[in-house]
Image (cartoon, rainbow, N blue to C red; front, side, top):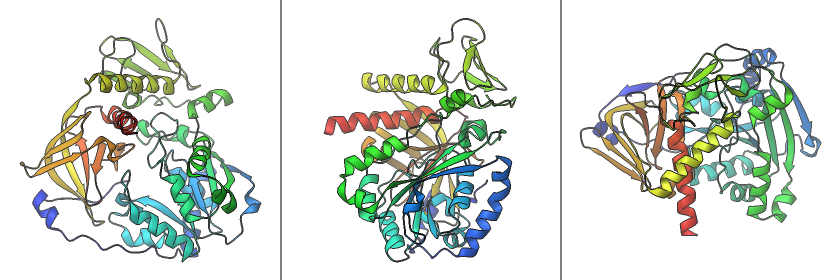
Length: 423
């Protein structure tokens, strides 16, 4: 999927009028039916099935908050199938509205800014359940998983649930990540996909429980490991391209410690610094072609990279300093390419400069608990996004440096470090 872009100078973009906020529109049944029909072929190809637990507790027209883990595009098709019998409004990142604002509003989408304190989003969600008497579908992780495990949830989620005062439903997918992992460059695999739809919290339970208690329940509900499930269930991924792009996640060699020298291609991942290579088996395990296998499990390797990043932060040696192409999002007409610059990231946070000296933006570590970063974003390239309520900047490494995963890890760990110091 592509996104509409246009080249303008930084000064020209700043002068553009800002769009006025609009409340969510009522979702038409015809659009729900259309979404379900469009989703039919993909779901049929994956032999989709769903187990429902406690769903008889939810009234047919009772508004609820539906929380769903986010693995790949098929998540939306699963939702279209499971929720076609009720009006539901999808919380969708603002860039999803670019070039198709009216369509997205007719589909019932609610715009949101990722990893930004978005008070307007909460107001729109309350309007949806209280005035439209409709349900809300939300992907609280806000980003696709890189390594097949859960990504951080916002601490504010429990507070939001207390404000909404409607039942909470959980949809947990299985197989969606294995079918189309983000690092693999939109190459789909032949894997069965299923889901579990569970009545998680009633209105009374929400009223009785504290925000920390609700957050604890949500953390448990969003605890998963797609590769572990693959291994335990004996699911085979036989495609000969299954390791393509795996270096985007496994960017650091556990043998020689070199970064940016890994390459995932075909069924293997190799370090071009020390020549150590792994076979990515059909079972989801890694196996060294020669010698010791330090990590059999991809999430274990990724966790080790996280620990390395945290150590670098604590020792003051972590730094990102790269040239980037810069795009800006200030409205839903298009994403504006405004020029070139440098993205600098240290323990002090992000510093983005460029556009012939006109752009100078800083973002402190405590601004967000995670980072909006993506592989092959809208088919433009690997991307890191920072910004605030007024504007979002999309930064694309100019020379293709493999830094997206590491930068997300650094932002998350830096937030934890700062939060601990301030508590």
